[in-house]
Length: 69
Image (cartoon, rainbow, N blue to C red; front, side):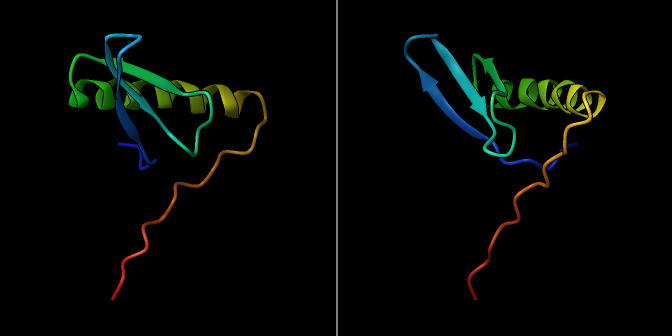
């Protein structure tokens, strides 16, 4: 499982939930439910990262959560 952040929102235009990742600009995945969009984003992210690596691009680090004490 990849550990990148996901933003999931309903898209009226697409009639589906859309998952995007701030660490991976250009990545988006769709689903009928938020869970489906997240699962599709995981699959898409793997391919996205493989292409980045093959192209010699720098692979971004996942964001780290800041926990308030």
